[in-house]
Length: 224
Ligand code: AMP
Image 1 (cartoon, rainbow, N blue to C red):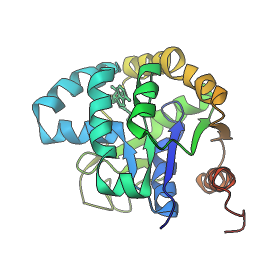
Image 2: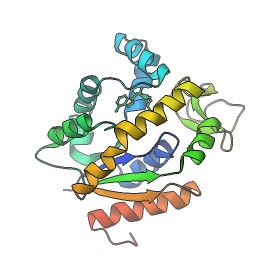
Image 3: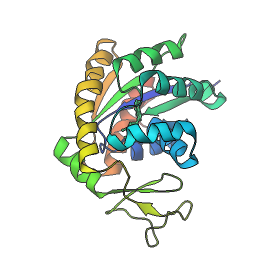
Image 4: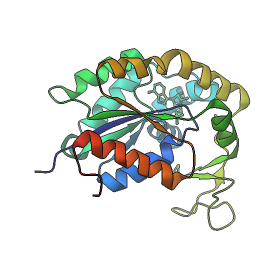
């Protein structure tokens, strides 16, 4: 039986987590589980939960630990994630979420937590240029737009600025990252789970660095 791959990718908004997680998920054939994408899908579906989440998201605030941990716990219990593993993007974001994740995974544990490190000036530039499909949530940017007239390559949906990429909400999210999420870097480092990978440079270069880090952690020879 193939050994599961269980990864968490930490990093500021705009660090490139979304793009790299999609690629890593293809490379290791494990589901990419993005809490931001799950919440945006609930908003698009217009559910009660989605309406509640939208209010937090538009202000750049965090959804409560209990609610988001419940959503992740249900998702991780699904067959694909429990058998193959996962790449978690956007969770955990607080110490309480990291503790909840540890419990959810028992008796197994994470293989690796990657801090995708990018300076704040660069993430601000990337956020200003990023765009998202209103329908399926696929990511684009001004430098890397869809092929035809801001309609999504995957589903034909309209590609727009993210609703929570306003100046005030971006600032709030970066402040929350520093106060709530950055401390997890030490938390995982003390548990000998953490590696830092630079998220600067071309997407392909970053991808190669990430694969090298994951292969090292899994004991996979570097040439495979
Ligand atoms: P993201 O796409 O990861 O930037 O997430 C977008 C928004 O969803 C965040 O600004 C939060 O409002 C909410 N969100 C996503 N993940 C979490 C989480 N783990 N805990 C709390 N709120 C979250």
